[in-house]
Length: 146
Image (cartoon, rainbow, N blue to C red; front, side, top):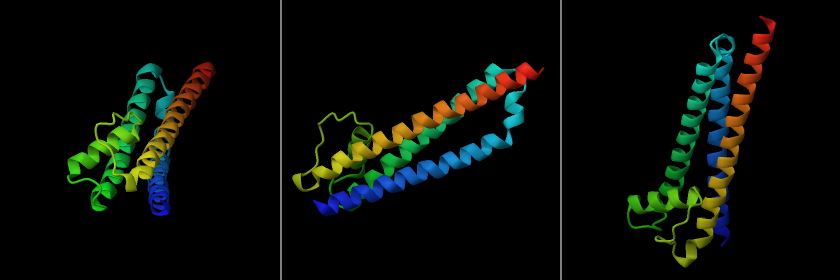
């Protein structure tokens, strides 16, 4: 039990740290094009921000799923990598079909996969909202000054 909690905690920290670092890089990138984003036309640039942040979120989910799947596979929990990826995806997204289940000695780790995914989805949602809010407020301010 404690081994599962330890592994799950480490994997959650790894995926959150990666998402945080990627968010930092994305924020830095947006700061480089900030003045361009504030110039007219606003709506296509706002759409671009949505697309970039959505791609970032998709990348973070994909990385998180592969990280968990890699550990499941290396631990020998599943016989194939495909099964490990499938279980990780279903658990990470908290969908939980239940058609592939963990052996009893690893079932706590399955819940931690879901908790880690839930935590990362919260972070990604917050980043999407913040990026849109920041750009849109900047655009409205720039529009008022003209």
